[in-house]
Image (cartoon, rainbow, N blue to C red; front, side):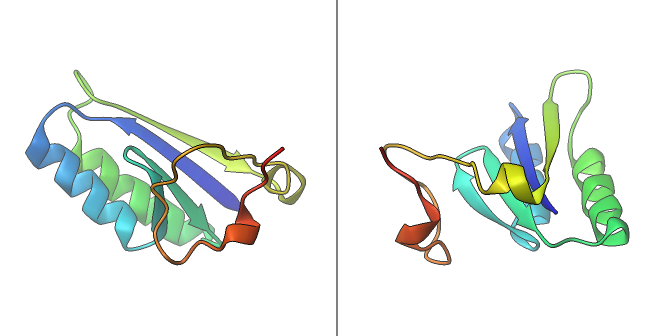
Length: 95
């Protein structure tokens, strides 16, 4: 299953800790959006626990979306991509 994690963290130090937790298991597709592929339930829980420890829930926000295989195939991306080199051009659908 693919997960999309989007966050709004105002403090640079906390934002860095959130990014650091997500970089180890996913790829950045926008400045504040990561895609996490093929994570087991245990690994996902560990990563999200680390993200929760890094953020301040009174001012920061993190959203996690689970995408099934059918939904993953319908992902569309347009415009400038922040994606790292692990992404291939074939991964994007442009009409």
